[in-house]
Image (spheres, rainbow, N blue to C red):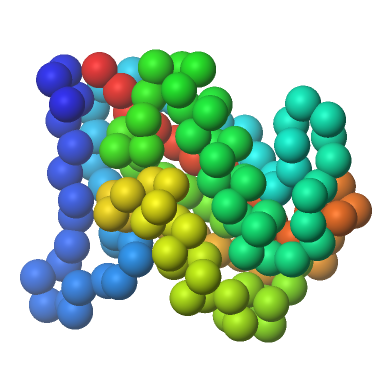
Length: 135
C-alpha cells in the first residue's frame, strides 16, 4: 500500500479479536462511504428479504463505491453495520462470515454492529457504512 500507513492496534493484555480489529491507525486520503443497503442500486429493488443475501449485496455495494474512489477492501479502516433483526443476524453468522471473506478477503478493520428499530428503506435488514484510507 504505497503511500498508506496502516497499523492494527491491539492492547497486549487483551485476547485477540475475531473478525474485527480493536482499532486501526492510518495515514493517507480518507474515503467515507455512505450507508449501503442490500439492494440493487440501479433499480432500488431488494432481491431478497433474508439477512445473508442482503449482507452480500450491501458489501458488494460498499466495494463498488470504494472502487469508484480508487480504493479496495484492503484500504478499509472502519465498518459500521446497522441491522434491524438481531436473531436473524445471529442465525446467519456463519453464512455472513463466509460472505464477508469472499467479498472483503481476510482484512478485518475496526467494526461496530448496531441493532436499530428500522432503516429508511422499509425492506432493508442491513446498512453498512465504511471508511477507507488510500494513497
